[in-house]
Length: 150
Image (cartoon, rainbow, N blue to C red; front, top):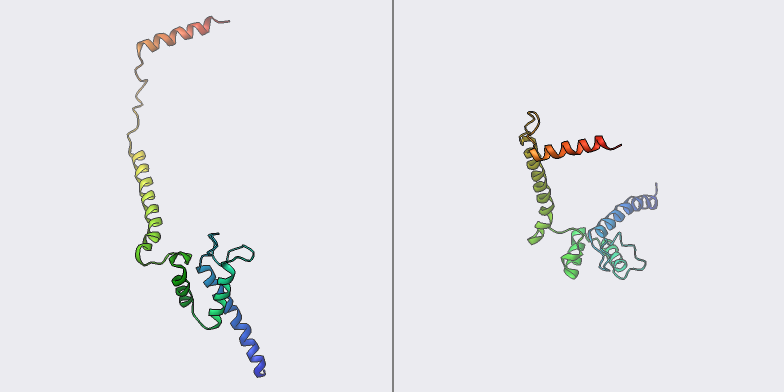
C-alpha cells in the first residue's frame, strides 16, 4: 500500500474518533439559547448559541485540545450553568446526593409502613360484635315494613 493510501486509511480510522469526541463535548455542554437541551441536542435552526458553540468545539478539537480543556474554557466564559451535569465540587455535591437520599428515605418509609400493616393486630373475629339495642329495633321495624309492602 502506498504512503497516500496509508494516510487515507489513518484519516478514515481517526475521523470517527474525532466525531465521537465532538459529540461527547457537545453533550457535556448546555445550549445557552434557553432551550434547556445540550449543545448536541439543540434542535433550533441556526441557533444563535448552539451553532457557534459547535463551531468553537470543532476548532478546539482540531487544535488538539482535550475535553477537559474545552469544558474549562466554556465554564470560564459562561459559568457552571453551561455544564450539562453538575461537578462534584462545592455545593454541587448536593445535586448528586439528593436523589439517592430521597429514594432511600422513601424506601425506608414504605418499608416501615408495610411492617406496621403486617404487624398490626387483626380485629377480633369472635362472633358477632355487640349491637346497640336501638339499632336492633330499627332493623326489625325496617324488615317488617319490607315484608308488608306488596
